[in-house]
Image (cartoon, rainbow, N blue to C red; front, side, top):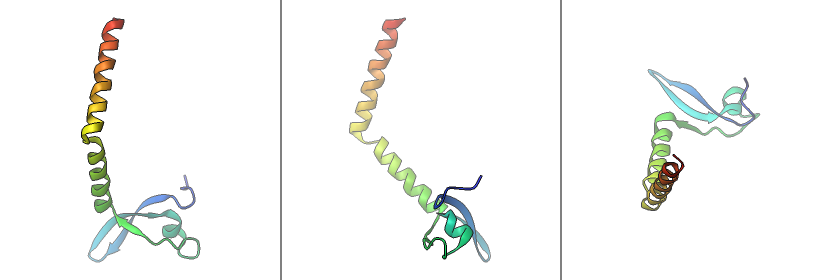
Amino acid sequence: MRPVRGALCVGKKTYRPRVQSGYGCSDHVNRGDTVCGNGVYAPVEALDVALLDGVEQAVLDPVVLGYVLDKAGSRRQHVRRIR
């Protein structure tokens, strides 16, 4: 299946003697600058760490945790009443 135009793809770049995995624009990677001038290529490790840090900050926010725990508690009470 071909990615949609301008989709994010995972690829590998070889910097002798090592290979670096990264995210980039599929059109740029597959077809070059004439089709897509977006040559941004982010290393997988750096982007994964940044993404997980953002998710962790959002999920571990005290307001979010309070909301989730309140909802879980009320759902649990609702299920007990049904049984």
